[in-house]
Image (cartoon, rainbow, N blue to C red; front, side):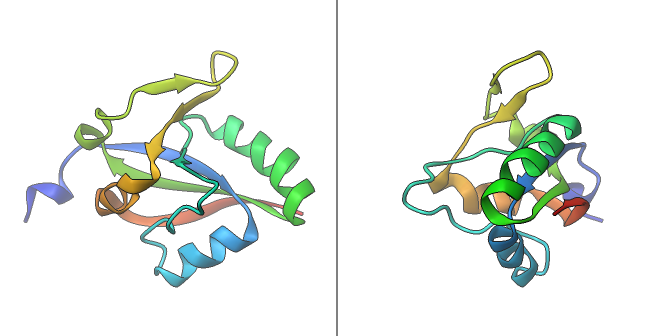
Length: 119
């Protein structure tokens, strides 16, 4: 058994719209798609309630649907990204530069799963 499968992981959430979710599905639920030119940062969040608020209040308004995904990433790898407080005490994000997204995806453990859907 490799050490990768037993390494500690951190649960992250990502609010997303239908277009991005379709690209995740095409990756067999294992990777986030490359960022668009106007998206220099990929930001997963550390709090499920914060992800729900974004998916429900922003993604639905802009895309007609919003989804919250949950996934695990190797904890040791995440130490390279400082936690950013984007608002209140629980509004915490990681900012992953777009050019590092392939590396980030390589440290996802298991599959990305949809845990909430809003329309």
